[in-house]
Image (tube, rainbow, N blue to C red):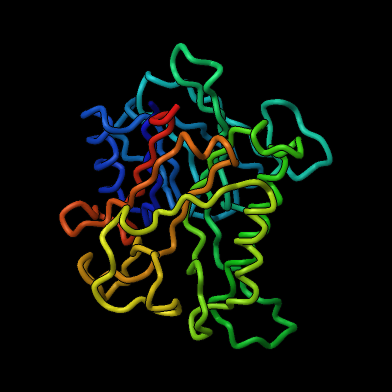
Length: 284
């Protein structure tokens, strides 16, 4: 079994130390990270990741990363290049800055169980200045569709069972949204539909695999199964009531994957996002 943590770290050095402590206890093999900065120097070789993997290195500080944290797996990182028509076997075409990182994860002694792991971060994209739009934050579905286009490169057969793809991360949107104050529900619904069309099954986390929200969740129906994975700057973990983080796996392979939100008040961690615990191979 491969143990994976998916986590938006909110650029917190303390989150790196929390992750390293989990690795020391044997609780995690691979991390799919968003809003990650370089780990503190005192961690040394405890965390392994591919440096300068992104094809464009602007002044951007919220990178997605795939990190190896144990010798129970071998991680083979894909080097990012612009989205050319064709790429080399160790490359991936990426159309958005900081939106994804991808690697091949090979369980020790089980090359037949290898899978592609993708860390996703649907960053907010502002409308073009010519629109005169009042949306100062922008919209996350723009970069979510860029992510889906890039992941599509790993879909090479009409039968999803020929693929072993795990994609997880922060999509900055509410699944099942109906409200329009914080969401663009008609546009965002196309993101969820497109995951399904690519043969990527939605795995949650959904209730009961995580603590339910205490206050009402915004933008979604009252009977939602969403579980909070994000807290605002004015909320404590106990008050968190928004799900922004999700996991998908290719149809067939998804039967080997389980997901749980580590969103209890005593397990939330030092970021504004909680961790998602993913296990691959439990039902294999």
